[in-house]
Image 1 (cartoon, rainbow, N blue to C red):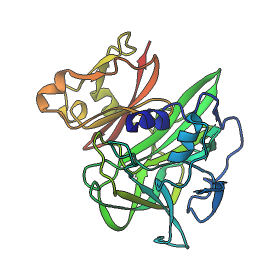
Image 2 (image 1 turned 60 degrees about the horizontal axis):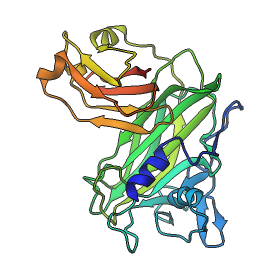
Image 3 (image 1 turned 135 degrees about the vertical axis):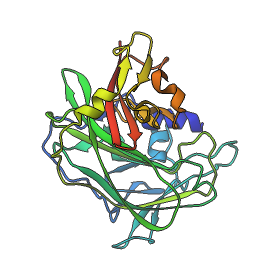
Image 4 (image 1 turned 180 degrees about the vertical axis):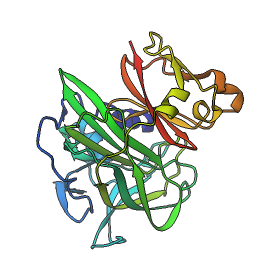
Length: 308
């Protein structure tokens, strides 16, 4: 069930009937401090403007779920009165724990309208519990644009969070696939864990999620020229990374996301011997555009991968 939920939550969204919030004017990230909560049904409260684990299950099962503890209201706030707590929970009768999840939007709409090009994703968090160091709690912000019946990736960022016993500020730059285009939607998603083996009792507290600043930087042509990707486009889903001048580029840790922000592949740093041909294996993924983010010593290097 956990693997089913992972695909459902970080895949094309909520359900086949969900729609993207595109073609609208800019809007602030709603309820980014989680101060406002509302009843989703008579048994369960949710932060206004956010979708939770239970919402996703209700999309698939014709039942109103009670509060199962995945997403709870917390008075342990950095400022204000409330924060949101994402909790990894082992439900009765199940073998594996399930992570807590929130994503901005509604049960019928992925993301929120947004046309700005922010510079950074900023938020405060705590991460505690038995799986804080191993469960790979994760947050991502993805900017997209809907055009010609296709969703185009504009930019984004994804972060695996280390343990934090006290509120810790994160402020990281977004990486842009296109510096000339503006998005129409932003999707922000957070998970109490994304590792294959999760631990019940792990808790991720979030408060004051913001998109700040605006982009002014241009691409680094030297860094991009140092990394070669072939073939690209690929007919098979297999790509090879090479950086003969500087092995740190092609051997750096990386993530690959699809246009919805779903992480489809993550790898740690490779040995230097892989600099002349490191495999990125996306076989089994659908044709389309994917975003490769290499976390190099010079910063995050972003490249587009295309599967035909």
